[in-house]
Length: 232
Image (cartoon, rainbow, N blue to C red; front, side):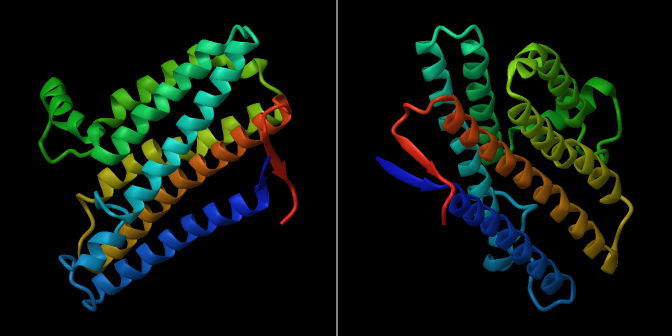
């Protein structure tokens, strides 16, 4: 039997999120006070607004952890002939796409298409938020009955994690798009803080979702040979 301490998992993931956030803020402060060049390797590795670096690597792995847990639940639900088995499979596929998007920034490829479709200025950023919001709303409607079927603790954790994630991924992303066109000089540090909060909300949302899935597996499938210990 494998013994896994939930407290240790949560502390490890929380420390990773906190460490990445603080490292990014330190890099931003050093950058805007001319201590660190934006082209330097350490800045590019720690900047949460960059791609193919440590924060991106962490977020991609965290999303893949969600995929594995969702796939496990879907498999167990299939054995029970549960009517929501396909919903769990759909969530696993959704998070697989999110991990791919996190690694390759696919959503940003929508910006040129949306500018052309809406015939707007090329300076407008983050237009992908429009189809992204529509997609999130459609998913919420489709999964509403599924959510209502879950235990109240699981449902509340999922809703709160989704609120955190979408607040960062869509809400603050939109604010960042407007701010980046109007902020310059040392005020760029304020913009960097907004971006840091945006990424922090996304990471916390995923972290909370992982916790919800672990608790759900531990409570709904006691026969699974993984022991979720509450001890340190």
